[in-house]
Length: 210
Length: 257
Image (tube, rainbow over all chains, first blue to last red; front, top):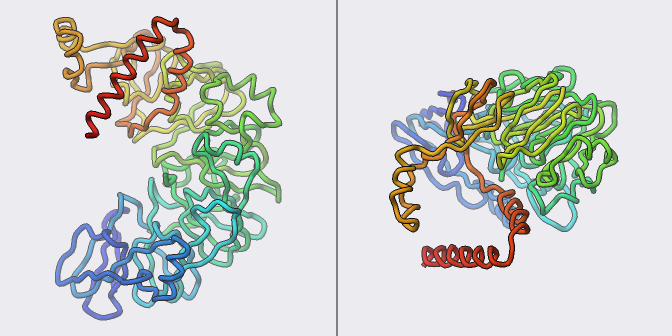
């Protein structure tokens, strides 16, 4: 199994035909491929099984993934986003589904509930969790990804529109600043933000999703 | 690409993030005006909080009224106050910091991210631009690196980021297009645009800041600006305007069919 970055924005995955080299990639992210490579819809729940699919239906956190297997290499890219490679060794990665580019065979995905935030629904209420041992590639739109360390002495507040994911033992809560709410509806200002405490790493991107 | 995590001890005090032209970090030392939607993350220091208050409901009312002289844009800005680091980003544009020393610089409103309270903000006579006056720092974004040129120069309005020290630009129309305009019947005017006939003409001494392109957004302020101007019209002119609006609406409906 070999993953490499052709440019900061293009991930190349080499497949040797073995089951272990197969990956699940974001549907529609293939920009080029060589050899005998097959693409198959990962099925309900992005390959997470029926339970995950049901939760996704409820949560509105969709995870469009395709299974990529065979012998050859595939080039993966989405909207010229920068690619961030992570190696998971049993930790839990929580990630916004639209920031997930590719994950190796053996990693499990599920929908994670991240907390209540009043009546209005929106981004960040549910997120995708990735667990197991393997590699995962995330997308950062607008520029190189930014990794920010969270420690008990340095909590972090993040704009949900720039949030990509987090790794480690971090607790997430919603900060609804009353003064922020006053500007909602008249501009695209943040109605709430995400607060992270504990110890771990939070990933953000320089561009805000619209 | 894997990245080394940053934290308050390794973040820059007032600079781009290492190896990242698209994100900028400011350590708060006093009130900072920030355009909404540009803050991507912040670390409050010492167990405190950083407050982002709308200009209409801030505890710093007097300071805001003195420094922020633009009713049109007041709803798009907040004041950040407190201790800690604030990270800013803007559509993946390059972000640069500018220092003004008893100077003035005019910048495209959408590209201005933040400015400190040493500066005073005013609306430029050119629609869609804001002028900063005084001594202090501000952050502005550009699509790709900023290109600095000196007048005399004519620039494409979309490529203009801002200008410093020189007089506000005049509108220049391409001579070929002007000839066509003068020769044509009034109604046949709109089929003759190349997209480049309208330019901003800079003269005098100073610096003009350009970007490689602009991803245009619908300007939310165009409507508010027009509303303000409509109030200056008399009944005759209003009726004429109503006829124009109705004609435009009819054309839109025709196109949708």
